[in-house]
Image (cartoon, rainbow, N blue to C red; front, side, top):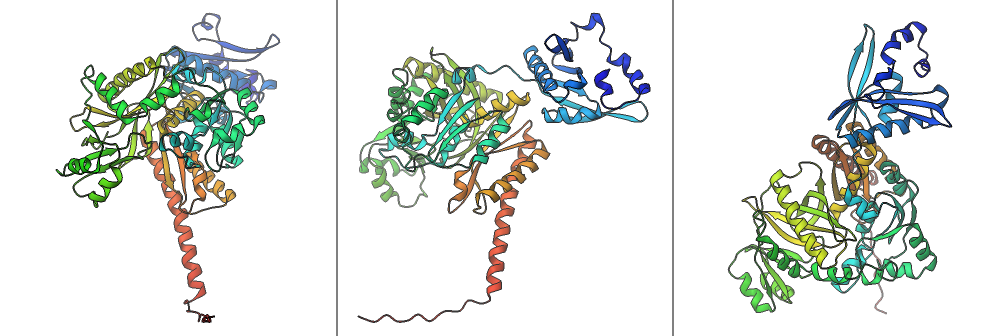
Length: 571
């Protein structure tokens, strides 16, 4: 009653609330009552009413002199965690109008209005319980802070024979852990980027070392700075994008991990493993694959005119993979370029709606496989562009097949002593079967989406859909300040829709053809689609604005005139 009176209600109104707010002795256990106390004094009380799956936040009141000191936040988060543990999927809040802002700030969404008497309306909100931390997240981070190292170019270069960096993709390493304590990135990033991410994902303070390796050789740059090595080891578990021989002196891998990576990042060895496992999985079909060792042999393979996929043994993100059809120009020249040990794989004519599924998982230190989830990738030709993850992004039958086969792959990798993150990518054929096409023994683009999803589920409860767009055209190159302003405006537009916008790749904003990597999260596919349209529209408007500006400048100068050039002397 003291807490209710804090908002200035008169005695008559408070008297009418007394019976409604009374907590009777026999209800204390039934309503799951919890108090917040300090030094024996009760500072607040809350109840979780009802039975799963839908519950109600019956009471949440704080002593007036403790309001604004975090007591309400502690009680609210406790209720949401407890609701998740007990199996609630939704909690309804009939809020005092003065408290609505608090609940909105905590992540609840306004649902409707309840009429109380003839002249008083109460906002009704919906909140989503926080589920227990998934086992894969605990296995990945060991329950503690992590240090994220963006050695993407270094990882890819160990197979290509040359490190070509830095790589904008390295920024994605920032997302792959629940509580990053430090980020080590090859390219410089602005402070606002990490601060905004930390605020949205609940990271807390993060130490950032960026711009340390202009050539992408991150491990060498770290080892050249003993002070950085010491900080890196002391701040948490080092998590590189992928394990490499160059990274071993910094944080050695468990025995056998680097060797397993070299073996199964190979598309040839991955294919052999797929064939060995497929007979026990009826929903799996493994496309035929042959290794070709000469230009003449490759020309014969391409001669019949069937569509095939050419694969180099190693390649990431679609590099080293080419779809060839009778319409492909320059087949003879292509045969010369690709003849050295190329793999020729049967082309799988996929279904349109669910063509490119992926399955991610973590193998813990004991060799147990922890499924992370399935996603639907956006693949342009053979190039990965992003992914959507969330409940029901794939039909149940495809999900079950991908998980069962992906776990079987993980158990085989565990027997080969691999430990860490991995994924299996598929193509869905026209009959609804999954054709596995490669294994990645490292962090992946989908891994970023899964970590963002887990972070938002942890903070706000419920289930989020997350879509990543790794190369979203920006429209114009902007200085750091205006770029942040553009991102902030677009983020606010998404928030109005009920979506969260995160910039995942900021460094490409200054390329000659600028783009951003982004992630969009929402609790429904409809909102996800609306937010993506909003983001694309905002970037397109930026491009249009600068297009109009360039046209205006040309008009203001009038017609261009050719200037006479002085002739040079033959001397």
